[in-house]
Image (cartoon, rainbow, N blue to C red):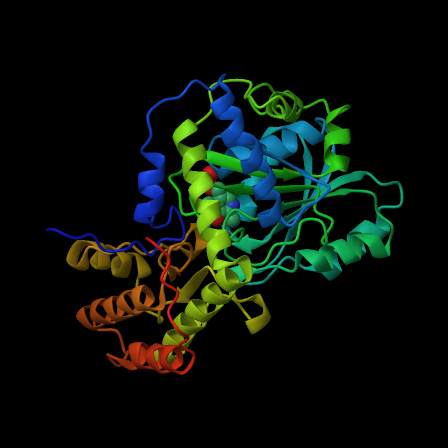
Length: 396
Ligand SMILES: *Cc1c(COP(=O)(O)O)cnc(C)c1O
């Protein structure tokens, strides 16, 4: 086999050649001026992606889960009460992580396919007159269900009752692919990672931190060492790192930001939206349903698709890999066997998406799905043809 198919898992994502080359660098001394010259502008440019002017960016050698842990450990104390919605595997895992840190989590249970309910958050916060709740957790893009939640609406619900809790957002599978506005939405800690919208190898948690969260770190009593915001911010300000940085990833991130800014963030978001819409047309063409309940919840980075009654989505994804050497996302937790997911984020084009859609059709035909072969591909083709724009050819 001479080529490799793209992956359609919603992270880690396909790594453009340009970024693979950028990560292929020899060691430099991380206590040298060259390192400071790489790091300092990088942190400044990351702020543009988070859309924060007042916040700071900290990074840790970790996956996104490390970013969750950093958010919690730096700003809260054991016994603190936090409010979260559980509507998919990722929001579920963040809740569990909070519990292991000794926090009291009030979980608002939602259907897996719904978004984080700003109205229910608002009602609970309004009732919390003594301000026991210290933080509100929102998963901006629930990767398990392909649901985008309205973080701004949660902020408005908090402000409507003047609740002083911090707002944390998981934007691991949305940042740099869908619009995220840390300052406008009043997000105090925003958690992302290197391996999704940034199109890089896994290994960096990238976290936006507001002045309020930094202030909270002054009194927060959860134990932390590796993930300490204060030590990281102090070291970064001097152009350094408190321990050995993931140098190759930082070079990759420099190149990733260059790519994103060359395309333009708004164009990046529009590309994701257009590709996602083509995938959604394909799903409709197949006569299948998305896990996301309504259009305003549709994610532009991942689509979770319900398989027909009597079919096992695990068998479908296994067949896709075994027979056609293409990876798609499986159903997670209670959705195992019921949904499969098409990740369409990062280094993705309409042409790549069409190859994924067409391959799903082959596998569904092989497995006897009641789906007309070509129906999804045709619907996506029609949409992509109608909305085609002069191709942007950035160096890959
Ligand atoms: C990928 C992802 C994470 C982090 O997972 P890691 O495997 O630790 O990088 C967290 N939240 C969401 C919504 C994700 O998609």
